[in-house]
Length: 205
Image (tube, rainbow, N blue to C red):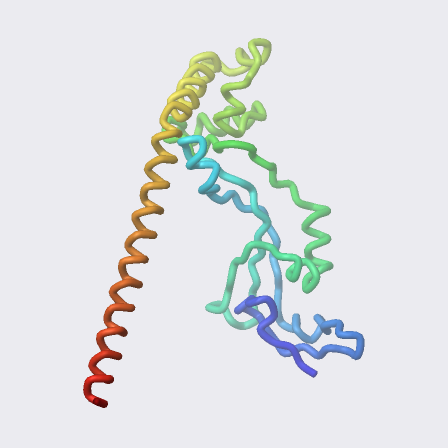
């Protein structure tokens, strides 16, 4: 018995045997395949609409490379199937990963911040706009312009909060318009099919 195209990977899929207990032989499936697990910061559409500003979340991803094939490389959100298929590599990733988890909007996504400013605040363990706005009075003076930037961060978040309702309303309106357009297309299609059936019946008569 063989098994292929496992979990829609699309990259590095090989035929793998399945034993009498129904377990996949990943050793065969993984020949010549190298997985690289990492953390990626990706947009969170729902949170962005809710807060009225770009919001991001940290997602586990895997880059799957096939030996000798530089054109056949895919990057995917990590699924349970990836964790099973590449169990050893995933375990090493979990043991050794050093990437930080950012809660909120990364400073790198704030146009007001220059790369140098970002590095300076990251050196003080401030990685997000929310984190900057929450720095205590006891620690804010560790940066020369800390108080100024903290107030800017608070103002940015307050403005985003005020606009969040409008952002959500606009997004919902767009979804409704798309739904109405889809329904209109379906109605046109149904009317066309009905007219075709009527013509066929008239010819048959």
